[in-house]
Length: 454
Image (cartoon, rainbow, N blue to C red; front, top):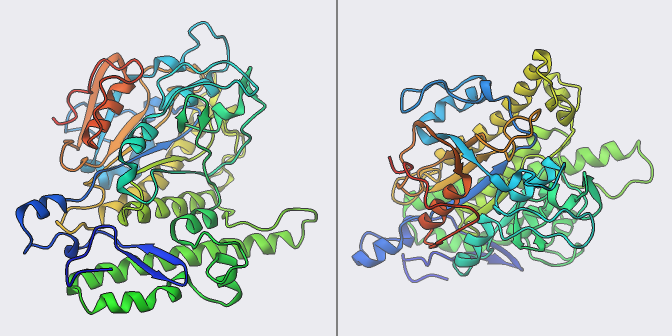
């Protein structure tokens, strides 16, 4: 598994079929190694795309000032402690989210075009067609570097066929990640299944190392790898031991949160007849988002994958947000017709999403890499929507934020306003290049997005 104090970047802890990748550690790029080895040990750059539906209330999203001396407005207030770690981008457009002669269906179309830059075929049946999405374009080129090419997660499930929006298949509304023009990458919404994919054995539910098997014998997945961890513990530095302890504790905390969610679901089912077996989905939407976000973070930290898409809700979602006093459906409210009461409620929903994103980014900011930088420093987290204003269904001046420095290649702490109609796909080409993927074209991109580096 190791050679003295030098560890390979893809070292795993193993035991009875359970496999846990290690986080980036000093021993993976030792200062005693040759200069080439040090360069090779530089933390990798990760990319994530966090999607919110139905647009936003732009006056409460967009900073009034440009440049470094900007103030985050109401919706983004919880991101203020992270202001120097993000860039607010205004003026970007995803043209293929527009009708362009295809008539109604703006929600489904905007989601399908968001990361693909391709006009989706208007179809409700099996003849769906969009294009490879930016995340999958990156994943296809770097998948040999990690255990999984990409991770697709989300809070809401949904059908992959049938009518969801004015002649468009539900596959368009429920997915932003596309492996190719006819294959959406179905997201996982159940935290237990995400956990099993990242840290489980891949065995049947009844197997000893599986989630249900471990629960039967009241064991954590860490019980299966601790002997391997103890052997490693004697051969690494104190700083690496602390990093390993923190990482394993984070895994156990997530495991306990998943178990708690299952117990709560099971208790609720005692009063409901004829339902399926309980899952690990928390009843509280905020906890659901944070739990999935924590798993994304662990996957990045352990270099299990470097690419993730995360739909905080499906496009066109009509979920209510009673936890913040909004009982009406999100989509219904987004057709506000200028009603200030409805606009205020939309802003509260937008702020609720931003609060959960702030939690994720803050955790990433405080996780240190071997070179002293943070996980957030070595990431590019795109957060935004495929529609600007839910009432207008417009696709120009999209609400887009990029958090993280992309390995030191992005100058953060700014609000940058681009000329309207600047292709959103320019941003994606810039991200591809920063991850070592050279893309000459993507969608309607006219080149890289200038100004990210300052």
